[in-house]
Image (cartoon, rainbow, N blue to C red; front, side, top):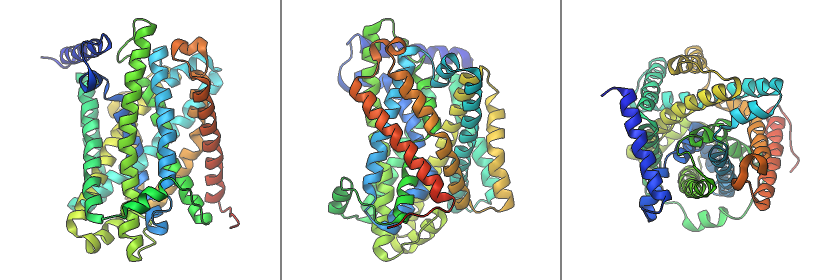
Length: 433
């Protein structure tokens, strides 16, 4: 059976299963299963190697005290990703396509340019994470590990030839694998449950270093390419035939977003409280990069813990890099109306990483620079998303409720202010404490 034929067959089965859920022929978890996929693909962006760097540094330096930032970032991500999914369902278009349709051409091209730079900056972090994982876990030279990462992510992307479900299932499996790794790490690290519960809800901001790390955690969590991508994943997945179906599909997608983002939130919390328990608790308060974290874990918790840590990093880097390439395709198709072959995009986006590895540039410094670039771009998709989802003439029955729009505006203002603060601090600014 040819790939196009298999694609049609797989997608027909998925759509039929979803239709059965919409018509209430299926109940409970069986009804939700056909809708699981898009949010898990987007969730990979929330557990990428950039999160490892910021969460581990925060936990090692400040212990449990910044866990509340992870909770806040995850709640913001949950709201934003749900609005993005809802936009695709309501309009049948992705966020970039909506920008091209409603904004002046010059503005769409500017947004496209910045978004492509952000996608490339994101891919650098993700690619470096996977490369570093291969290097530390299997002792593969960095340059060869980079090539291996590129080939692996391309092969994963080829699953899309067989329909949306195989790729969604594969990426979801990576999310679950990363979560399982951190369940193991939690058992081995033996964190203080009381400290986790307290600092997850009680804000603390002790000095300018804590502010910088807190902003970095949020910047590494809410990713611009994930905001664009989610609308593209839902736009034609299950096409609603009337307003009633739109509401039902949106409700199923909201449940999926909650499940996927809670899972991603747990992983981020676990990264930080593991670092708090193992590194901060033993006096290793300056763990600022992934390699040092791995080397320090080995004598503190043993080689098994260090290996599990690297497996999760490798799964994170490979899957998030594949998702980043998918987002790049959605961004280009939406803003300028054309696409390039996946292999060509894969080659273009991996070139900067090859150059960085070949020149021996410090991976951690590169991650910091990539986060600054993302900070410049993030407000654009979030502002556009709020603008579209609050308009009844665009969203119809799925228009935001006033309370949702208000929360979204507050999130947008917080994101803009925090990203401006990150830029200020990154370029030598100081805060008085």
